[in-house]
Length: 151
Image (cartoon, rainbow, N blue to C red; front, side):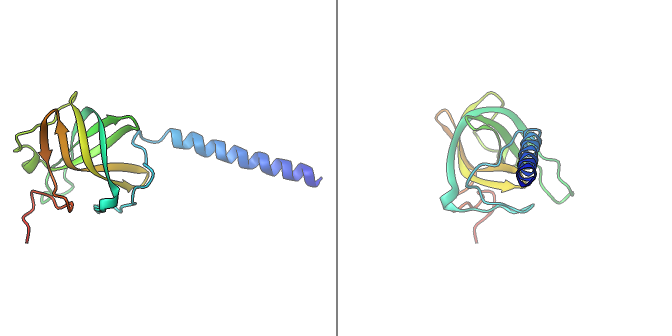
């Protein structure tokens, strides 16, 4: 009787694990990457230890819709990397659109930045984006956005 209960308990745990795996496969495509710090909504954590370089093809340019009139439109893109698709955050449209280097869908780029995780999704905060021999600089070595003046 003990063996039967133990066997049924083990089968129940296996069934739960399989159900959790199936649930995870139905989530959005942007994975949580290992070693990324968790960030609450609105927070951007810069940590030099999390600087990474990812290469791939830009599949879409994304422009956020501000939640209030005092917030700027943010520009980013989806990068198809060897790890799968990842959302790359560049900065406010008022800054990004004025730069000499423009990023478009289909471009092959190399992004240097740091990974942050919100919920189950990871994002790459871009410090710079290389497109061929051109470099789009967005943040300095300390993670400070170039569109913000230094004190």
